[in-house]
Image (cartoon, rainbow, N blue to C red):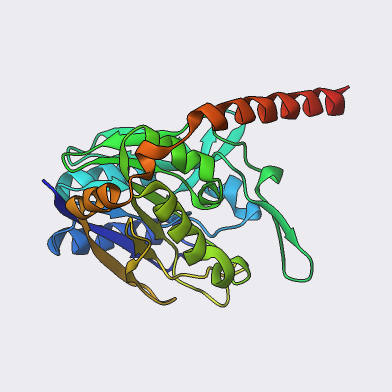
Length: 290
């Protein structure tokens, strides 16, 4: 199987969790009917995006209503569902978590956002996920009959090293449910996605909520799929809808043969530098803690 259809659901997210979940399931059914084999929801699909909402909307993963609904939708529609993300409660900690379900309705991975969205752009936006959330501590990928897929959440896409690890582990597609805003979205959303695709010669897709100008946090939208050549093969604007793309794995292999950077990497030079930088970082942390 060298080709399959991917669907990115760009849905408007409101205050009502049950309505958000029902809408997501309706979109999943629509995408499945159109032939999609892998369906991705946006970041925080069951909750408004904002630190003041996370604790009230948080639920166990699995075990909560959102996970149960996605498991049923995956089983009923015989598709892989990358469940965007939801606020997850685990003991006293909260996470920004993506659960992935196979066509049997089984949860195959749970990815907790590794890099928390803590930024401060003076006069434009300040957001600190770490005020409420804890970071995940592992990378997450899953197998399908088509290819291996790596998962990140929004801010994770800014960290090239994470994508490089996925590439080294054999991933052909990276999926990033995200919610870039009106400051970072126009400047970086597509550019970063194209960079990850070109650097690693793989498909990269981002699924955003639709834009709501009345929300506390206004999402950029523009859910997009980029191929290993860095070309945008499917995208949309800020409105609600579904983005479809044919993932052609033969095209990926063709690109990798034409420009064989994966075989030309100089790990003999990179690894000593990485080890030195890692040691320096640890030393700096010790100084801070002392």
